[in-house]
Image 1 (cartoon, one colour):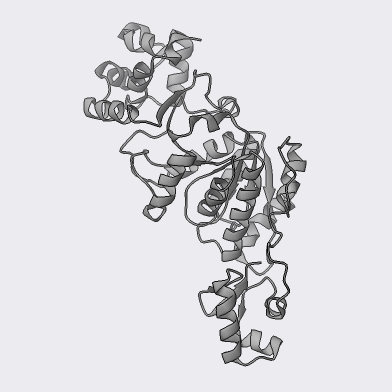
Image 2 (image 1 turned 45 degrees about the vertical axis):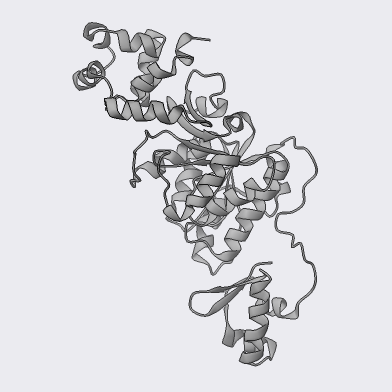
Length: 361
């Protein structure tokens, strides 16, 4: 293995040079063979490969405070710097058109070499969408597949929670430095992933969230994975960017269909019309990708409790107002409210904004 794959301080110094991005780093490594050799090169040697401002930045070196903070962070247990030449750099990601030259990790580095499936979707997910994402994440993780997502609210968070329930665990690819958590509401989840899964970022410590970071990190989510499952997405959803990048990377794209009345189903339906595989169970994914797994799995959408509740039949699977439900069921509003509260406490029904209710199982 090249010496540069082991010399992580040289990699770190090179990676922290302002204005020298992944493409430039790959060109330099092709030309010089190692990060250490790049840092030792003079202006004349660098001129064929970089512009003047990039050479000036490289010769000036990284910000010393940021370098020192990052070295201290990397010295903590479970913190990693993964370079493009490391043996455990994710092989599928390395084969993409624009692999990050450096990745920062917190948690179980070995997950990078496991089979991965991305689950993505809306931040403003419905309760049913979140339930589906968590159930699919759990089903896939239970057979050793690592669930990859982006730590956003909604579908991403639910998928991570499901992944953490099985041995496959989960990888969260974030759009900030790993010393920050965005969104803050997922702080506890991020800490749990760092302990039992893997947090991953191409961004240096101290990097704050910015709109352009999230489409950029999406190429890593799809690049790590053999396929991408879209659970819920509006037509202008960022999840469709991930799906498009997955197609460009030669990955399989799959989608869960939903109600024809829901705006959050329209993105999934558009993908299915364009050739994405319609998925109703985790088994569909296993079969589509011909994925060898450990034990047999069951449909992620199958309720654990098969006991029949007449009110659930009246609810259907689309959001419904209590007045419409009263008309369907013949029950009074007071009787309905009591039943719905019981079903909410059992996790079988969710109350939505506007006084509507939706069945979860």
